[in-house]
Amino acid sequence: MDDARTPWQALARGRYLRSAWPWRAAGYLAGGALTGPPLLLGLVLLATVGVIAFPLLALLGLAGVPAAALERRRLRIVDPDPAPTPHRTPAEPGLLAWARLRYREPATWRELAHTVLHGFLLWWVDLAALVALLGLPLLLLTTPLQLALAADDEVKVLKLWLVTSHPAALACAAAGAVLLPALLYPLGALAGARAALTRALLAPRERELRTLLTEVTRSRARLVDAFEAERRRIERDLHDGAQQRLVALTMTLGLARLDAPPGPLADRLDTAHAEAGRVLAELRELIHGIHPQVLTDYGLAGALADVAERSAVPVATELCAGLPRLPESVEAAAYFGVCEALANIGRHSGAGRAALTARHTGGALLIDVTDDGRGGADPAAGSGLTGLADRIAVLDGTLTITSPPGGPTVLSLEIPCPVSSPENSAP
Image (cartoon, rainbow, N blue to C red; front, side, top):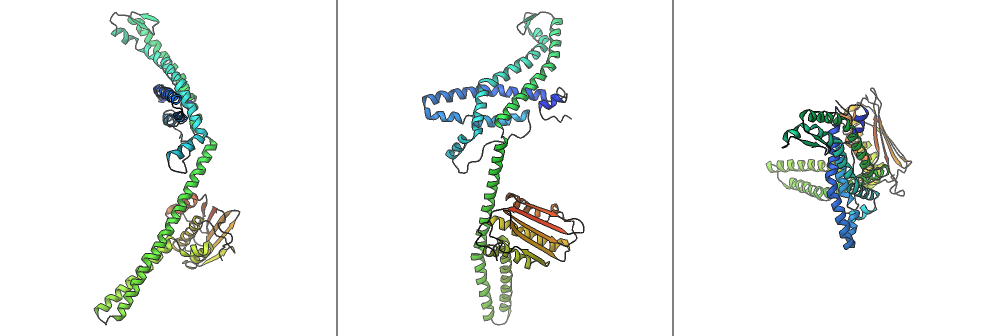
């Protein structure tokens, strides 16, 4: 099985003719020869219309964007490595914002340069290479067929030699059979060079990749912020709406139970009152799980102290005095991470005690949760920490677990973050 990923690799390993790369190289060059003429026509038309109507000349600057997108897709024929777009996503919707951003990006002008080069030169090179390196030996190979179909029993091969006999035709075919594999090598080399030029001009460069990565990170952080805002809205709606109505219903049922005489009606009211109380308790737990009010009111330090007090395993807390208020998305991710860690300790570890340490130093939030349980924890075994690790990764943070057999287990959480409100520190 040939594992070469480009024509260059197949050529270097001596497996070129035994692979599909010669025909893939020919297909790539044929695609360039086919897309070149309409591209040239489009460039000429845009330039002509731009001279007549000068404002339309601005469209010429964006002509390379769709052409480059097509070229990046064609590149997969001979280079399967990903070639993502180097363009950023506009921060604002609308065609004007898109065009403004595109005109400011260096990638747009490199794409235009490649489009002009392809339209005026490269497709001619592709066509000439196909004719010279593939067409000529194929014509020689078909000489006996041409002679058999000729009406006057003679054929002029390549417009150079007159062939009138079958032995001469077979000699031409033998020459074509020798030339074809030999000429497939420069064909593959040319396709590899064309692909390398396309990748150099149209694929993202290192600086642009860093810019794209930064943009993706920022967009993911914005999604997290929007998600947290939606969680708080749902929590407020449930707290101020459904919970208050359930409280009123519970009080009404309690008063009705007091007023009802003993009997079946009183028993049913008593059952309904107890059920309403259970529903209210479940709703309060649900609200607390969506976004705990203590996190909003007292910050991360108060929320962690609260969850430590409610843990099934005794937890020794060591929170830095005056732990500052942090961005809401950071506080929420850290809080739910600690909740999941303490829940896992209570369910799976067999620990007798746990310790919780939290501090903000060096521009990062650092949290450690340690237990004296049996160890051997596997985050991939469905502990719920995998989703939290993904959520923390969105904030450019890390969640690591050290759990040798026999313990202790240490969960460490680190999230880079600025101080949101230094003056409003948690008690």
